[in-house]
Length: 246
Image (cartoon, rainbow, N blue to C red):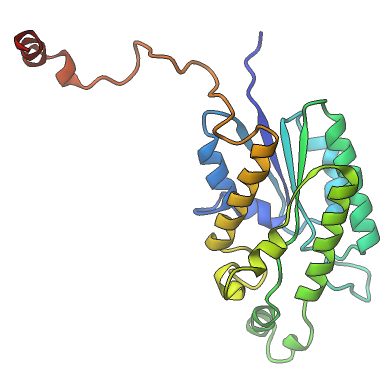
């Protein structure tokens, strides 16, 4: 029989793509589950639920867990041209429903976990706009915390409706003192502190479905083996003679 281990898919946009950077939440999970499960990165910066929905059939295996972390880009402001990342809340919710149904259909054992989009530090986004486009740019914000909160609530609503797990990262971050600078790196992406919060919440949610890293068995062979590391001293004559004396 072919060897298999559980697969956890991290699906999302830049929040997921950057999660394998040093200190990132995906990197922490990959370390915790290094001999237990495959953490599969499916993060595409700039993506929204519309693009993710269209691509689902092309890049998903049949995993034990699928983590869906989308919404920050959907919550961008709509543009007059119709271009850009914005997805209205009704469509955002419908896209999440579709992805939940699709992922659940992959196998009877596949678990789905949604993560709400984090809050936004409006002032940091203004400063970033200034630095990129000049003094007039801060008059146009690309995102606001008010909009992020609405999409976070929509995500919670879909999770309840679809009976899937959910991590409320948005409100967890807001409970941290000075969250604007402690938990966010550029007013939008989560900082190492934000990643710590997310990992803690993820592990709590995974324990509920017996997928906590402590509950997932190591794959392949973990019993003592002839190729296990042995310090040279333990096979030396000095060591053996000392054993005989004692």
